[in-house]
Amino acid sequence: MNPEEFRVFQELVHERFAKGIERMDAIEQMILANQKASVDTAAAVAEHMAITREMKDAFDLAKTGLRVVGVLGTVAKWVATIAGALAAIWAAIHGTGNGGKPL
Image 1 (cartoon, rainbow, N blue to C red):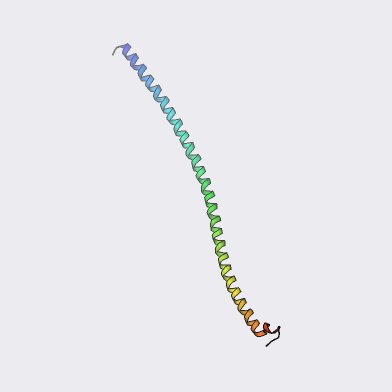
Image 2: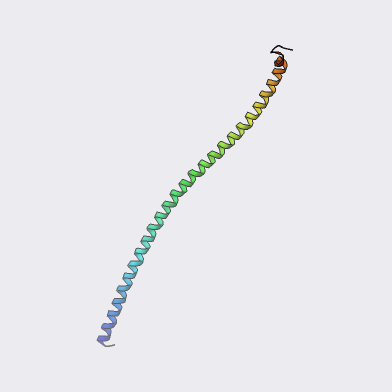
């Protein structure tokens, strides 16, 4: 290889090396941007999970409240039945059909 060919070869190597460095810099920038996007996405997911957890807690609380209301409704039904029976017994004993006078 004569000196002129060696010089051309050297320029080619330097040119390719410079392009390789540019490509590597671009790849590094893309990786950094991707890492930042991943961190941002993780933060958004964490925020959404917190909101979802709050919504689940609210639904669980509502579900428990509805169960309590259901139990209170059952208790009220029994109390009303017993009160009606007691009122009927009292009315039978005191005779309200005779002007409020006992039989």
